[in-house]
Length: 317
Image (tube, rainbow, N blue to C red):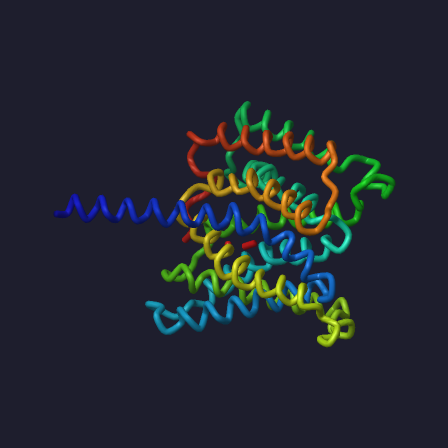
């Protein structure tokens, strides 16, 4: 009987992990296009901050009364650090998508696993990458240079230089937040942890919006149905479902496995951007995508048999 219960629990756990990976793979790939639509008539930091605060408040309201204990100050502090790093990166993506096509943005964000390897290498008592990981890093960086070369960064290429730099900075921030999330203290209720991160990270984006003067540029009368629909999609599928799935995976599997979402997100984003927004797909974009994904795949395969870079979490996107 005990063996049967254990087997049923293992199968249920595998099913939950598979569903979470599907959500992160597919839903997050589609959020790049939804974000592009949303920022057409909604200022980016306001859009992103309001999205995450609403999602976080809903999640907190749902789980607060069911939590075994109230979060401690230490847990709130950890949630704030992780939320700011992860969702600050998300706000950067929203801002950059005013200047960079959604498919290209997804390709640049796909470099997150590269930065995770480098941050894990440089942190105290970090993991020294092996030959395979270093090869993957070299391949991935080559793809990045193919997509965003010197001409782009100086404003003379096909990709906006400032937008590309913001996306790369956001990728580094997301990688750092993902690694910290696996070590940070957290409440026993996973959804409460996610709600705290969404709430604190979203609040930091609203502060950034005020500093940037975005409220003065928001006109609800001029918000289009397409932007409003994109924002609603981001709240439900990007934050409530996608971010929860990501945070769950960080707690139940290794960072290297979670990072495999970088294989699929760019493909989904590039296809949707082309099909629904008329974004151009050039041979250079396709070649860059192939090289970047190959680099990420090489890193993941090389680290498959390694111990997780950090202890299990004690996130977001």
